[in-house]
Amino acid sequence: MELVFLDVKTMGDIPNLTLIEKYGNVTYYQTTRPEQTLERIQDADIVITNKVVLNKSIIEQAHKLKFICISATGTNNVDKVAAEKRGIPVKNASDYSTQSVTQGTFAILFHLLVNIPYFDQYVKGGDYSKTDIFTHFGNGFWELNGKRFGIIGLGAIGRQVAKVAAAFGAEVVYYSTSGQNTDQPYLRLDLDEFLGTSDVVSIHAPLNENTANLMNYDRLKQMKRSAILINVGRGGIVNEADLAKALDEELIAGAGIDVFTQEPINPQNPLLHVTNKDRLALTPHVTWASIEARTLLMEKVGRNIEEFLQERH
Image (cartoon, rainbow, N blue to C red; front, side, top):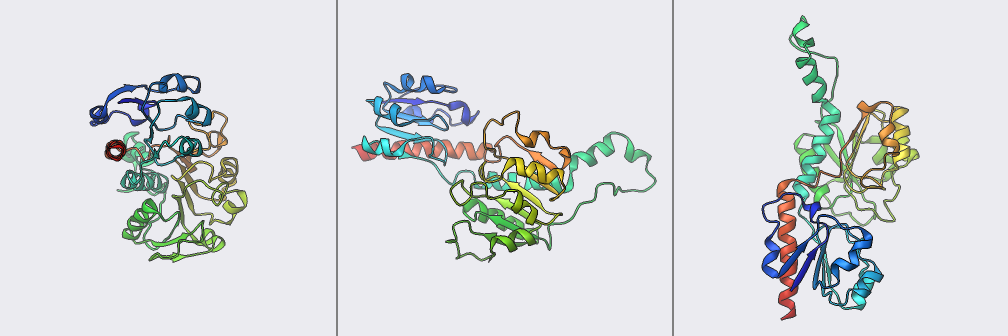
C-alpha cells in the first residue's frame, strides 16, 4: 500500500508522526504546491492532506487513488463529489482540539483583559521600584465574574468554553447561527440582544452561508464599547476591514483574532495596520495546535486509515 502525506509540516513535531508507516510505504512531503500535487499522488493508494487541494481534475487523474484522509476537520479542500463518483471515500478528523482551542480562547481573552506584558514591563523596566505604594493602577482591568459571556457556535468547543466561562462566574448566553441549536442549558438570544448585552463575544462557529461576514461594521457597532470580541472559529466570519475600523473608532474595547480570511495573513490585511495596536491580539491560527491536540489528530488519521483498510477486506 502506497501512502502519501502531502503537507506533513502542518502537523509539526509530534511523537507519533510516523504511526501510519505500519499501513504501508509512506512518502512525506513538507508542503506541496498546486502544480506538484498530481505528480506526487500518481502512484498513491492513500493520500493524506491537511490543506493541499484535491480538485476534480486531480482526483480524476489519480488512477490508483483509493482513499483520501484529511488531517483536519474542514473538508472544503477536497472535491467530494468527484471522489464519490470514483468510489473514493473521504474521511476527516474531528474532536481533537477542543481543550486546546478552549485554552487558547482564554489565553487571548486574558491577554486583552489583563495585559500581563504591560505589568511585566512595569516591574522589569524599573517603574515599580520607584513607586511609593505597593501596587499599580495604571492599566485597569475587569473581572469575568458577573459579566455576560456570549458564544457564537455552541458545538463541542463552544460548550467547553461555556463551562470555563461559567467556572469564572460569568453568565453564559449564546446565539445560534442556524436557529436549530435550542436544547442547551444556557440562555439563547436573538442576535441584536446578544451583541448589545454581551461583555465578551467568542466565536466558535464554522464558516458557512449563515456565518460569512456575520460580524460586519453594523454588527460591531451594536456591541458594548467595553466588550471584547474573540474569533477562534474561522476567518471570514469577522469582516477584517470593518473590525479594524471599529477598533480605531473605539467602538469596542478589544479583539483577539486567531483565524483569517487568507492564511498566512496578507501583509495588506487591515488588522495589521490598526492604529491602537493594544486593542488587538493576533495569533497565527494556533489555538488548535497544542502538542496533545496534534498527537490526538495523528491518532485519528491512523484510525481512519485502519478502518478503511478493514472495510476493504
